Image (cartoon, rainbow, N blue to C red; front, top):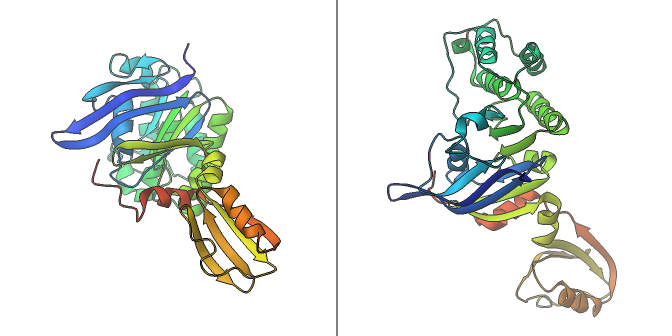
Length: 302
């Protein structure tokens, strides 16, 4: 038995000469809420489509619960709730008809009223035809479909897109509840505050390549530290001009540094000026993400 809900090995996919993903080795442990981060075009959707066997890799392998996504896709999808980034719905059906039809196709669903409970929590009127819905209400339909089967794995691509703040909060609650009930969640989003709030591990993908996989708390503490010092004697302007250290602000109250390397040297230098107070300022996931991407140019990959 594997410990991984999702595993890829050397996963690469090209659209002709255009690269989608390159040599991605990804592992998502069972029970994780895993955030998959990257700007548009970084390779997030491509990876998810390979996992769902919508497209097939040029080289490499993808597995869900130890099963080959390309060889055992039908059996795998019985255990997955999937919310794609681009929904395709039966617009002439009423939402309740659509949910009942979808329920009838599920082998493992033993709670016929669960879709209605989900719709009620999301504030979705299921008596209307889907074509009459706003984009936000269509997103709610997709969310109900993803969660209604109480799947072992949820693959969610930008699940809060187009939703108002209160409904976004409800979706976050649904994610946590599903995870507490035993589901693994693969959560792709560009809203980093949501990822930081709900995910325990994250992977950052850039230009089709996985550049970091860390626990959220490790990523926010290890990438760099922001420290504010107050001194008895104000250091000169060049006191902390060294590789791996950036002075971000200076005033009469003190100096704020971002320290990437050689924290021991920084502390030694700071001590020489007489530290009267020291504060470690939390670093957000968004700031770390921007540090990986510079100005946010994630390339032109799908």
